Image (cartoon, rainbow, N blue to C red; front, side, top):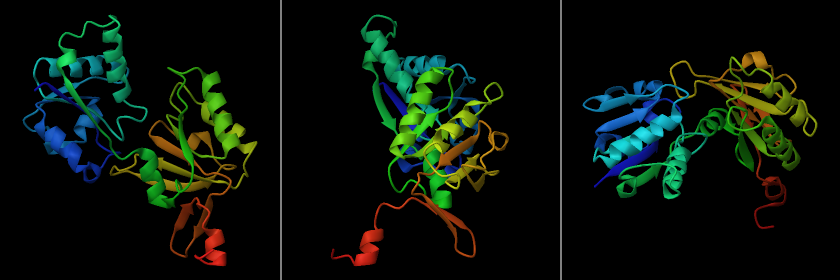
Length: 264
């Protein structure tokens, strides 16, 4: 059987790799990923053929994974977090569709059995570290305009602001992009209070993880980098301190039942 596993290994710590993904990596002879994601696998790399491709070569990574699988090598294409959220899974299917239209050669790709396996995403872990910020409706938006026009991104931010969603911002800033997060903050402040809780999770799931609480009004671009997940609460999101630490949660609407009783 020609097999390609498309897997997410979670945000960093090996304890958050799902058993399903563990099995896929163990069953694979070849692992394809950005080098850091392979490094995080530790001893799981033992006996495997490692195929590193740097940032910016995502298309090459997806092609290589398909080609290796087509040759009969059981292969795992790996991303951290969830491979289906702002990650590599979409490229695999884009390439397969292009092959159907004759725009990719893809020798033997049709014979490859593909299995996609999700992982814990950064937005899930950021919310869990501080409580339950994703307890009601939410969305995720990438602030990188390398592949998506900024006009489109800004339209989505405005829609999220209008819908009063909790918003998780991926790719918030980089060395070449330092204004998009500030603009997103301005847009959200048009429709929600300055005291809206904001969670900043950096290197989530790794040894040097930091998670801290700020507010939308006090959010500073200089406190954020490409390794940071920025999670902005809705107008309903609450933050409180129980005497030991800060907690953040977004209520689902149980307040009425708590007030009037469960039998209402």
